[in-house]
Length: 174
Image (cartoon, rainbow, N blue to C red):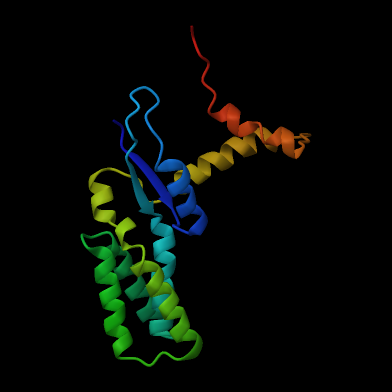
């Protein structure tokens, strides 16, 4: 059975899609339930790490940059999400974050804390699973761009909607 990965930003729509569409899927030939590995896109996790760096270091650009890079490396280590959250909490304990900075810290740390189960990047790398969705996003953009944006092309919405079907079309040989 192939290993399947669902790389996402883990927002509400993506979670609903996973629960409603992907989780119940079965293999078309064997009927076995497909096993998916959910992965929080590394780029989205790092956006929150940089938010933490911004609020924890403020105007200290060098400190912010060094800490953010170090946390990005740490995030890819075993137990990385916990280690990053622990490092952020230790720094926060030595600072006073009020108002917007405090709210931004809470929002970013809560995002990471509630999604740690999908941020086991060391394990995903060991299994040779993708850590980000960039390659798929680029492929989709390429397919649509090549088909829809050629010189002189004009498409209706209905006509453009046909393209995704063509991208997955496999002729059946009887």
